[in-house]
Image: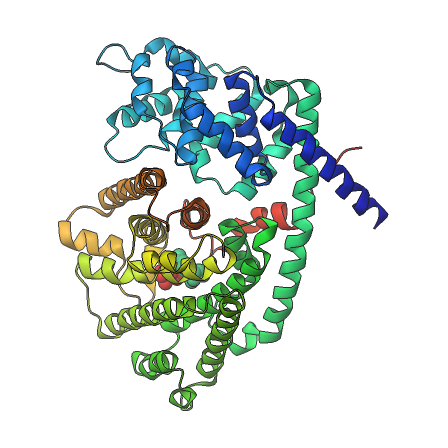
Length: 527
Ligand SMILES: CC(C)=CCC/C(C)=C/CC/C(C)=C/COP(=O)(O)OP(=O)(O)O
């Protein structure tokens, strides 16, 4: 215990040292940019949110500093950091790196660090920015061409970036990866500053990990008591993965209560998904759905025992949510949550009906229903429980209008999920996925359809980016603030992690490495 306390004292001291690094006046812009970038990679920027915002705001008004420069690396980092923050940065700034109206200058192809920064900046594009599409194609081609990169750290950064750009990475997983590969020599600050930064990040990672472990232990206890293997034999048993999912939505200590509640809820929804998808018949699901809609336990009394248990689980989770919303002075929120749950279960019911009737929906019908069964409206609303300062009644109203950012994150979920899981699902009796419906509609090959759907996913990411910029263009839209938008951005990032190559939720061994590295193994502190 003495040891833990010593670490905590050291952590507090280092926090102030790092804060000073962020706020020190007079540092060169490019150094500040790299410091903020490093803080974000290391997963500790949440301690300095207002300081970072001030710094970036200052930089957004000093564009001329960079517009006269030919330092592509700094310009690309500047562009990315500002856009991530929802601040204005024009893509035109990259125009000077092109040969007139043509392609990007060939001479850039050998400057791997700048090329990498340009590549990363492109993932902050909004719809219609052709110059960034061009830049992305250029950077991807040259980064992937086996360029003679000497520094092994850089080789690894490029490899990983091509797999998953920064914009799509979950902050907590990135922190673990970056801490493990942090190389003092790659940073522009002094050796002493780099060492403080790294030590602070290591201590912070372990302190937060202990909190996560405590939360997960409590949740696991609840889960063990449910005895899924006996009571829901047909269902996937995935509590650690559900926790990983929610930790992806928010990892910071202040969201602890939200994580506990939301993990339990997702676990119940996972049982629900399996019950609707491959256990119950449509005839059984009609009274079940109505029972929840009306909270009338009598309607489930003739149903199989597992469905009665599931009803009780939904009811208990919902009571907990209601209590928590009421306790922090937002009793109105529960009405939005209930409406989202009812809409969700009706959509599940529709899919069960189509499945049992062997109906092949048209693409538009399929998408209308299957965007709802991503559960994202419901999950987002419940996630606001943990952000009381930002999520006001206006926010709940706004989210119920299905804003672009929500539709975009649902689109990422539905299409990526269908692309990797449709083959397995079609082997069982399952409603056709977006892939089959698209093939039906167009007559194109499955391979071509998957390519087109991936383009839709890329477009949805641009829509998410645009919503961040709208936030500052329309300051009166009270609903769209970073802690609100970040929930939907992170949901899309979770999907990219779980469904990029395969269905990692079904084949959960694929996620084992992440569970172990962020929830089990502490970062080594050296001496
Ligand atoms: C990906 C997705 C829809 C996530 C919703 C969020 C949520 C409730 C996650 C819990 C796990 C779950 C049900 C995953 C989807 O299963 P599945 O692949 O069987 O989903 P499907 O039945 O909608 O295709």
